[in-house]
Length: 310
Image (cartoon, rainbow, N blue to C red; front, side):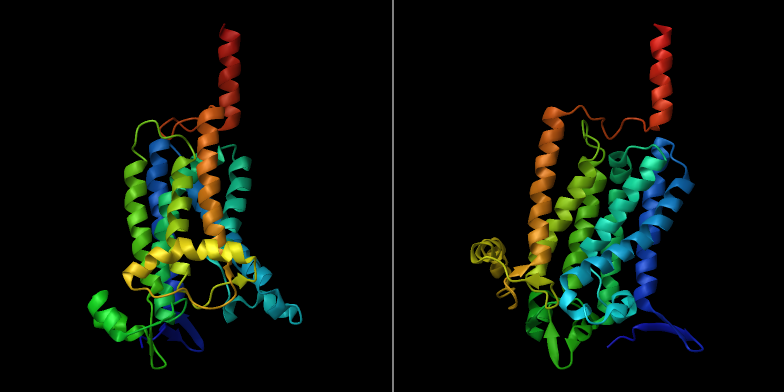
């Protein structure tokens, strides 16, 4: 097992998890700043966005987890803020970050969709790198597998195989699945953002759909999924959608309550994003990704000046 502690200063221990998450956030910020320069957006704008977004994401991640694990916290209210004891959810982090971004962009008088598009590659980059923090902590893994599956089917190096050997059992390296899926998504987003006629908001929605698609299948083998008891028809529907993973030797979905929250949310996000793209393209006039980004106040003044000139 790799040591999850990078170094210690007296009684203070610095964990690899925090370092890796920080590196992911910084690389994502760099990508956003770099793309923002194409639209003459100042670096400080993205720096402030990160300073607001990260705390909001942490709060959202914790609130999301506590909401679906309420039975564990209702008699211990102080544990709700004990984030150091574990228990955060990435979808909750996204919700928190999006809410903060909507408020921040409105205050700065920028269109949220335009800023979200610019940040999309950075978001998936943070997730791609951040999953290696789970690897260091031996957490958020999948169900049991054989050593042969890891070595001969997945052809993983020893240092990953050994880290997936936890208390005498080998587990699915779900961190690796999500990281590689996110890396592929990053490449696709970088290519798509140069596509002609791409509308504002579509790159961000593409990111949501890509991540959700991968998360749906990975979630099926996770052992720590948030879940609830739902109708049998919905459970059967989700299970049938996941069935193709049997061809990759993933076995069957992990047992537990029949509806996994992340799977249901993933399907909902994909459907909602597709419908929103169709609606915006057919019913609304929206700007293109390559159009200049102009604050609403300045844009209003420009339109007024044009009106007076006529």
